[in-house]
Amino acid sequence: MQALDSAQLYFSRAASMLELSDRVTALLAGAHREVRVQLPIEMDDGHLATFSGYRVQHNNARGPMKGGLRYHEEVNLDEVRALASLMTWKTAVVDIPYGGAKGGIAVDPHRLSDRELERLTRKFVSRLHEVIGPDTDIPAPDMGTDWRAMAWIMNEYNKFEGFNPACVTGKPAELFGIPGREEATGRGVGILSLKLLDRLGRQPQQTRVAIQGFGNVGLHTARFLQLAECQVVAVSDLSGAYYNPQGLDIQSLIQYTHQGDGTLRGYTEADALGGDELLGLDVELLIPAAIGGVITAENVGQIRAPVIVEAANGPIWPNADDQLIESGVVILPDILANAGGVTVSYFEWVQNRQHYKWGLARVRQELDRALSGAFEAVWQLASDRSISLRMAAYMLGIDRVREAVDMGGIR
Ligand code: NAD
Image (cartoon, rainbow, N blue to C red; front, top):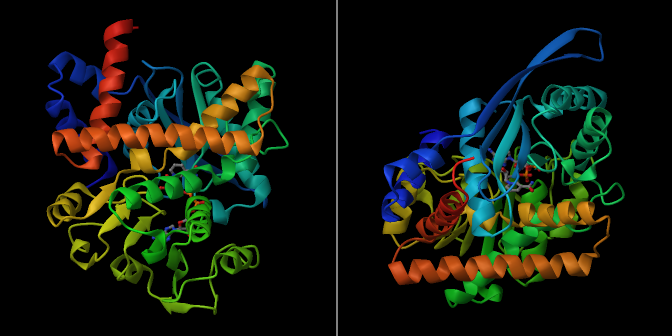
């Protein structure tokens, strides 16, 4: 199973429940534009290395296309296609005026120096600047990229197209970014987890949480949930998993990542577990916040958590998802759970276009409002139709895009 098979399967299930015509189904299934670029750069030692970059622009019926830029060695066109379509449904679920896109470069960013990463990012923009921009397609951070890459993208784009900070989001707050963007995805995961727990009659104080991934999303999710009095008992990253049944000290874990290689390798204030053991822990809430395809038909039997919130994109393959739903596990799907990032990216874009600065309190308040509205709509549809939250989120998102296509006609 690949990310694209998974995205297509969920799309076709939702399309058939919505009874979409073949014409509309075909229109929504394919991408508007797919670009692959060759990225040669000079490495620090003088040799020439070549990387592959991708940008897939899936759909713009509801507005300019929006989606992250991922740096990971396994990035490929099919994965980017899948993630671009998820962005179209995600922006529609949270009802912001965007379509969906995604990009990536097949590179392990940890193997490149900062200067090499900068050259690579600038080369990517120099190859693509004609087809991205504030009214067409706006990149943002994703796995392996952060505010630094977004600042380079803005700078390089401006060289070609003139000053326009709204061409990319996730920029540093000091450089046309917005306060609260860095925490937004994790904070959103936290806000939505609390809403879900509340609907299920569970108290945060009685909720033990395990989080896979301690990067941007996992770290901010952990911090938010601990402040909300959940007990975060396990987190993991590429170096392994760290467990304390009494609850981890998230602040000390965060500080630890600021030393050494940025991972939790060598952290001794908790029990070390094998990375995959985290998924099978006896907890009330499991949050995969690292990579796609981590819960599969092979390991689904190990899952003991009754509630899963998908902070990562596509962490559960459909055959495992079917089994979990059958056994009564409640799953909050990625296209709603991790929509906090794109929602605050939208606020950043609005701020850039208005040349006006928003404060953190306003960003948080508006984020809460947007996610609460989306959660209520998805929960209501799932209850009314007796379907999973995933199917409800897909149906809501796809139907909103369908409506825009119907009203606007084919452009
Ligand atoms: P990141 O690069 O900041 O962090 C990824 C983390 O996952 C790191 O701690 C890494 O060590 C860990 N990891 C990688 N492989 C792992 C494995 N096999 N087991 C355990 N840990 C592993 O990335 P991020 O921005 O936090 O993104 C994480 C996920 O959230 C991705 O699926 C991404 O698409 C999704 N997402 C991110 C954003 C965003 O705003 N950053 C928005 C929406 C969705």
